[in-house]
Each structure stands twice: as C-alpha cells, then as structure tokens.
Length: 287
Ligand SMILES: CCCCC/C=C\CCC/C=C/CC(=O)SCCNC(=O)CCNC(=O)[C@H](O)C(C)(C)COP(=O)(O)OP(=O)(O)OC[C@H]1O[C@@H](n2cnc3c(N)ncnc32)[C@H](O)[C@@H]1OP(=O)(O)O
Image 1 (cartoon, rainbow, N blue to C red):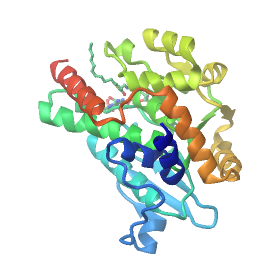
Image 2: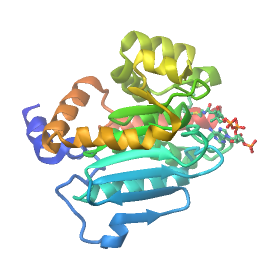
Image 3: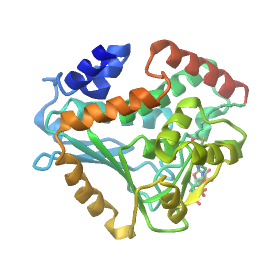
Image 4: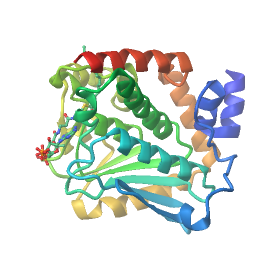
C-alpha cells in the first residue's frame, strides 16, 4: 500500500492503475510529443467533438451520435481515444462531458452490440466498455458530467464515472442503472461505482429494482449533485470546474485515488478484468 500511495502521488490514479498492472500509460508525466498543437486543442470526429480552452485548461467533450448517443464499439473507441489525448495533454486539467442531442445524454450500451454478434466481437465490445470506465473513473483530470437529457444504464455509468454531476432540472429526464428491468444484470464494477455515489442501501434498492430516477429524485438520493435549468447546465459546469481546479491537482488526485482503492473491487487488475470480460461476453452471446 505504501508503494501504491507513493505512486499515486507521482502518477495519479491512472498511473496507479498502470502500476497495478494495466493499460493506462497516460499519466500527466508522459506527454506525447506526437500531437500537434492543433490536434491537441480541437478534434472533431463523427461521434464526439472536443474543444479544449487552453486559457482555462478545461475541455468540453460533446457526444453527438444520434439518435441517442448509444455506446457502440465505434463510439467507445472514439471516446477512449479522445480521453487519452486529453489525459496526455499537460494543459488540460478538467473535462466536462455533455451531449449535443436534445433530451438524451446517453442511452447506454448499444443494444445492437449485444445481439447476434460473435463471441470475439462480444469480447472486444466488453473490453471497450471496461476501458471507458477505467479511463474515466481513473482520470487525472477533474471530470464533470453535464447531464442534459436522459441517461439510463451505461449512460448512468458514464455519469457516475465523473467526479461531479450536474443535471437539467426536468422531471422527464431520467437516470439510473435499470439493467434488471431489461432482464440483465449490472456487472460488479457498475455496482461499486453506484455504491460509491449513493451509498449501500440506495444502491441495493436501485440495482435490484432497476430504478430509473427522475432528475429531482436523482438529486434526493445523491445520484446527481445539482439540478439547473436547461440553458445553464454548461455554464454551471464551467463555474463548478473552476472550483475543482482551485484545488492543487496532486492533492485531488491522491485523495481520489485513496478513496477508490479502498472502495472499489479489483477490475483494474488484469485477471479480474479478463474474467469479467469472459463472463459477460459469454452472457451476451447466449442472451
Ligand atoms: C443473467 C444474465 C446476465 C446477462 C449479462 C449480460 C450483459 C450485461 C450487460 C449489462 C450492462 C448493460 C448496460 C446498458 O447500458 S444496456 C442498455 C440499456 N439502455 C436502455 O435501456 C435505454 C433504452 N432507451 C431509452 O430508454 C430511450 O431510447 C431514451 C434514451 C430515453 C430516449 O428516448 P426517446 O428520445 O423517446 O427515443 P426512442 O426511444 O424513440 O429511441 C430512438 C431510437 O434510438 C434507438 N435506441 C434507443 N436506445 C438504444 C440503445 N441503448 N441502443 C441502440 N439503440 C437505441 C431506438 O431503438 C430508436 O431507434 P429507431 O428510431 O430506429 O426506432
């Protein structure tokens, strides 16, 4: 543990994940010289748009994959590449995630990825889901979800993978891990992330009943941190981010790292990740 803490100070949580075994080799310490200034500041891809304001160090990642920003393999791959680029960019300290679509933040995992695909493809897809969570939850950046629409299942996972959640105050927008309502089961690390957000009892009820919460109810159980009018969600996220960035990065990162190490099951470990990948892809294949 002493080593883990020493490394956390040096590399942040992503660095600790890689020290523990795996993939994240993109702590703030290793800035790739490969990205041109232009590439670092703005990137546009079909499903995701990123704008980095180098004067504030805050990037806004907009999901723009109609109709519902579902998390397909292509989407997840793009998402992870963008996250990795930002992670390697020393000038980027904060990330806001939002949607360009009206009414939907993200509909969660793309149902079509879980239907009639080969075992290999199921495995690849699940690896990408894991990667998204590891990169986001383990990010060295301060992360805020500006939830401007419904966010069920994997969309909720993405939101609770951020440090802070601001949701539009609209009772028609819902959020939650509703997997059991679909007859499937949220994996253990979805559960951990939810428990870390809302506590044990609320998570238990929420998962077993597959509850989707309206925005006001989500605030009541602490699934989101703040509600704001639709037209203020981004500006509030920017204001909130400046408070997060007033904290020295290393202190925030170590604090987050210690919290996660003590409160999260070992998905960051290679064997746990592979076992999870194997179990879930077999389940998806036989559904
Ligand atoms: C013991 C067995 C163990 C088995 C374990 C196996 C696997 C474990 C995996 C567990 C993890 C799962 C996590 C997930 O994320 S599962 C996905 C769950 N997602 C949902 O339930 C969301 C469903 N969608 C909605 O609720 C709504 O679409 C909405 C997001 C609220 C938006 O509503 P609205 O604006 O009214 O839009 P529509 O409903 O009309 O949809 C428009 C369009 O989009 C298609 N679509 C919706 N969701 C998805 C999706 N997740 N993936 C792909 N496509 C989606 C929808 O079909 C419409 O398409 P058409 O216009 O072509 O009809």
